Image 1 (tube, rainbow, N blue to C red):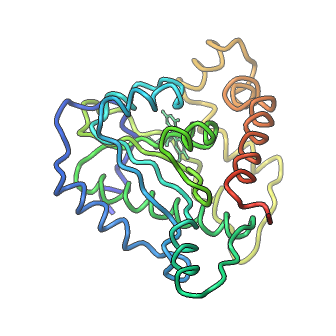
Image 2 (tube, protein in one colour; image 1 turned 135 degrees about the vertical axis):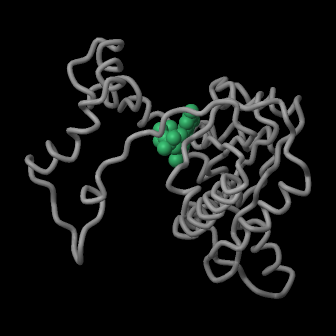
Length: 247
Ligand SMILES: Cc1cc2nc3c(=O)[nH]c(=O)nc-3n(C[C@H](O)[C@H](O)[C@H](O)COP(=O)(O)O)c2cc1C
């Protein structure tokens, strides 16, 4: 609980390595995660090699954690291995569809988060990389992912060399609904987002980006519709190419 409640994303790492034994212990713990039907329809690609990090860096939009972290993990939805096993055992795998992709994606993200928590419990800092889904087609190339495998998320891992302030969160009341969903009134929204909007860093964000509201920083700068539509189309193509669209 202590490590969960005190956690923060770490983007700067000391040069110290993460030993093979420690990484294996963390991965073992991660793989104890719940998994759909105990199928473990995910794979984890470990990147330690400097050349590989260099190749992955532009795909993660040159975020410096990629080359500076001792270890990077890419978590993939993977029905390739399970389907091969089925075919070899005279069983006909019916996993070339969108639902199976979602199943494997859920498995991959669950294992990623357990690995993250296990690493953080050992004092290691982690950072997720959302660029994984944006550039999925390129990761498929560089990481040599076969049909049935789709990269879902990645984390960089290393010993922290920064101690940033904890990021804010919405109040629990804003995200937890008792018994059924209670839709938000304007009064709720104003109250739940007031803390975030009052923060000095939020005000700075608005000023730096020449915007009027914090929400505009998200809609107009950080997560723009045009980008979302573009990356949605590339990702849908990836799902087709990787055989998850009812082919
Ligand atoms: C799916 C996902 C993708 C993320 N992608 C990035 C990223 O590409 N670069 C980055 O610096 N942080 C990334 N983050 C980290 C978030 O920015 C961070 O979790 C959030 O700002 C809250 O901060 P905290 O984790 O310190 O509480 C990502 C987090 C998640 C869950």
